[in-house]
Length: 122
Image 1 (cartoon, rainbow, N blue to C red):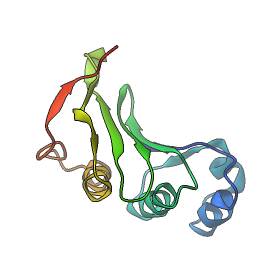
Image 2: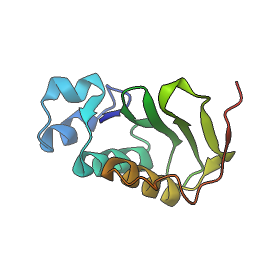
Image 3: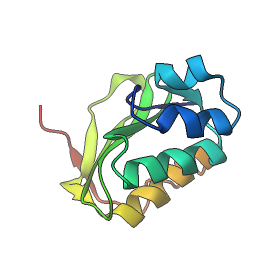
Image 4: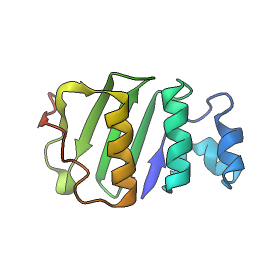
């Protein structure tokens, strides 16, 4: 499982390096997913240092975009190339976004519970 984020954000590489990531890995915008790295990236997202965050494993991913308390766009690509889904209405609040991504990285099979889903238009 990996974390993807926009590379090149000011200050982002230095605190990811502090988490034990090699600077070139952090600069690439891809890191192996750990709870500690997720927390740092959630902080970066909340503070507006990065615009989006993706948790992916193979062809499956959950992606969010937003800042601060929200709203956040939340989208999910299920396995096997099925139709992409989004949070109903297209957005969720920041606390719900953090909870969802923490559950995904922790491997909680019920990570999607509590969020109403609808087909992603497009």
